[in-house]
Image (cartoon, rainbow, N blue to C red; front, top):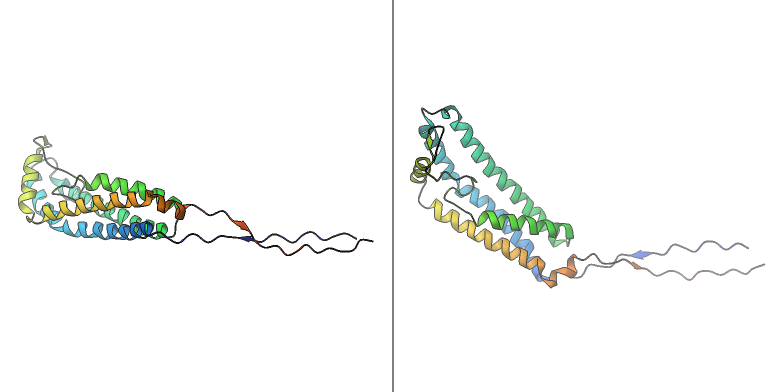
Length: 208
């Protein structure tokens, strides 16, 4: 008598260990970073308004006169794109990190490191990613004069608030990097090995 094949062995996926406090803290700090990105863009609105007033005047009578609006639009567009990428990215990474996804942990280190570098270089035009300081003149536009007039047209509170936000983001980004590299986080992000489940006793049959 031919014996039937043995039944398949059930594979039981082991449960992930409880999420450590360091990972939970890092996840919510990523949400905070996303919120600070949006706040920083809102704080920069007076700077963009100043650009709208100053650019046409400074570029008037120069070869770049017709390009003043384009330059301003590009500056604002780059700032908004930067905010969208980092805000959405940090929210997404926060969700995935809280679920223990190792690839998200690695990407978080990269993005937090980039923000740490960028936020550390916050300026009076924080959020535009551009600086007009200097004594050179390009296409008839004095960069130093442009910077001076932008600072004069921007409310005085914008610069210290922008710098404070940049410093705060840098500190939070550093904290996220440290929290996710701690040994307590390693076990949570390590994919548990599957275990073979219980297998019913293999039935025996009489032979003839």
